[in-house]
Length: 336
Ligand SMILES: [Zn+2]
Image (cartoon, rainbow, N blue to C red; front, side):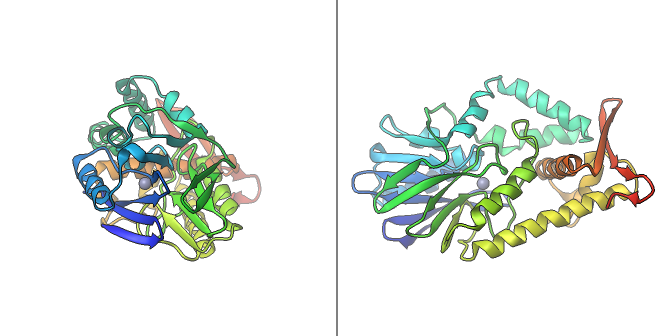
């Protein structure tokens, strides 16, 4: 599906079957002699077919097309290997490129390390194997490496009548980057700001406290003059400040839920996760597909890291398991 948003700017809806995200919003900008595509869809046949049909309808020549990728997730970067040609520039944040190049270990080794960590967090091994097999990051990443044109905060991409300024927004991923067009008051948010669903904030080896980074970088966007946000999924957003307020509140609520869960006593992250309210169409934690439990556990860990940095939670290790408990303040009872 193609939606014209402004002159020379289109939203391309790329379906993501069996994902709660439903679809990716890719954006196409037509310049004088080149095109720019922002985010691509996963490396899977359905996405490629949808993308090719949109590009054909809009008469886009991939030999005259550059790309900007907001972040490393497979639903944004996955198709790049199919779409980029020898003449394409693929713009990508320097910090995010560093994460990918630091990940040169064979994927089997990375997978084993990730699994070991999640087992220590309490994830049952058999269910974890299913989660990993179905994880989009392992299944739908690009099929070949591409060279990135690396960007950092303040760099500009000019295309057609648009001049976008790059804004670093780590949190959802370690080097997430948004684009801001100040004259048109247009903001391309990737997965930094979404409406109807909340961006997944997980624990990253490359970020000490990803939730803290995320919340800080929400406020960085708050003050910008924006009339329209073009997000990576779901609907366009008119009032970015209202949405940022809601996202801040969402995470404050989840942080409180972690503390309440620990009031009952020491727990693994796996035992804390069912106490958190998840925006997902399943009745109970037990009904979540294993891969959704993977995302939920990562999000739980991001909230635990935040509370640990605030001095509200202790962590200890026993028999290969990480256990969390509330920090008790002497004489004043619990720390919240
Ligand atoms: Zn996404």
